[in-house]
Length: 316
Image (cartoon, rainbow, N blue to C red; front, side, top):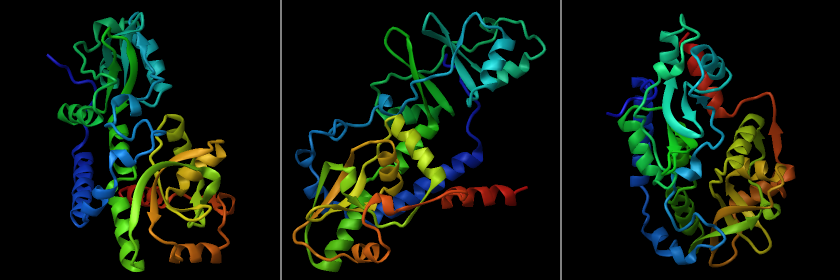
């Protein structure tokens, strides 16, 4: 029998996720993807992007540096390890192999017995996933059993990583999806009377011309962590003669530049003829010609973080 690993997501969390999903479906329903699908074909994708022609896998988003505890630990040692981490539970291992899972709830139940071996209280029969599993299938497992995260193991049971519901949600809402590309493509074609080919390519970071004058320092830090973990969602750019107009992905692009990354995966919109874009004129008026011209706002939060903080304060 499969045992639950973590406390289930709250009803409010499910409500928020459901609202987000509903809104995304409403947006996608208003977009004609036909024109995009005709031009965005696997054959038009650069071979430099290894993820372009396959579904995302668990291994693409899993956390590889996993906090775990050995089977011989007692409750006191496990509590100390859990407190020093950012998780609500930890895999339990023996010789590198997963043997169970210990949660904060189980440790709290036994806090009066600090020397008790965790082998007596761990949950066995743990739900796990394989690194080659489709990310969508892993998402179904997480939400089906109400889990916050699930260990990733290979066929021999060796612990390889952990995948969380946050990793799943971020993989869906932060990627430059065909819907977003289609909206930009359709708008530009209608406004300028041109046709646009969409290709997936690798573009030089130094060739990007920004259209956003400010980015947030806290969001830059978050993007850097994602890039370190391999979460490199494509940016969206418009090709010009000797540069690319950056339409979406300013935080990702600037974070990459600061980290010394020279190239980035992008959806490239290639107009049938050169036209002067309104966003391009506005960028020039603001003195934006390279990523170095973008101002980094420190001491202030990204709008999404600010809104969330205000909501939390209002509930107190």
